[in-house]
Length: 220
Ligand SMILES: O=C(CO)[C@H](O)[C@H](O)COP(=O)(O)O
Image (cartoon, rainbow, N blue to C red; front, side):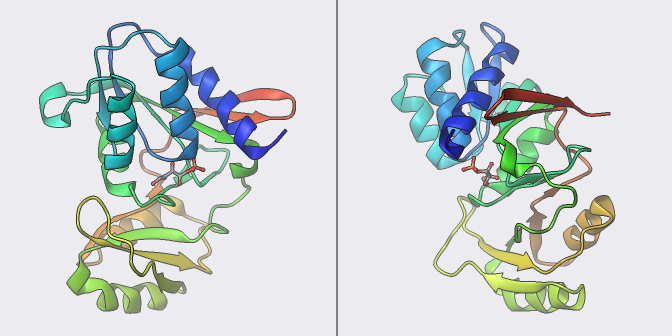
């Protein structure tokens, strides 16, 4: 089974968490694209979606799904999103698509976060995937020096601008033995908008598509 087919099966499995008439939080990425397409084709009819990116907003609207601002929706019952890595505690690295800040906000505003991915995303320890950090543009070099001092190798995602008008630094070489501590440390650097470590608010349910079907892991 291809990784794309595995993502699609994980996305399909998330449909059963969606309740008719709800306002649904929707993430960003290729797995979520499958989810949006499947939701429109065979999922329950929802009242509206709160979207984590311009790309997801466009896709939702192309399917005729109304998109609502988080400022109008209040807290959400469910958020569905992908991830770049997850450990068994369902702490995540996200932001490969650059939508980490809005994703973190919607995850925080949601009672349940269902994460969908192919099985390759499950890792013993986070950090092989370069950790994305969204930064205010004028702080980029300063933040990069601070990330270097933490032991990372910062790499500016040159040419990429987030939906919030900011820039991304991808940090490789970090040993992420204490994800919550590292999330707090990086978030405290002036100029950082947010780090793509979702450790304080990880997923509640992880659905992993693979050869043997979809494995479900619940947060302990
Ligand atoms: O965090 C994200 C975007 O900011 C995505 O969820 C993450 O990059 C996974 O993407 P994909 O589903 O394409 O593998």
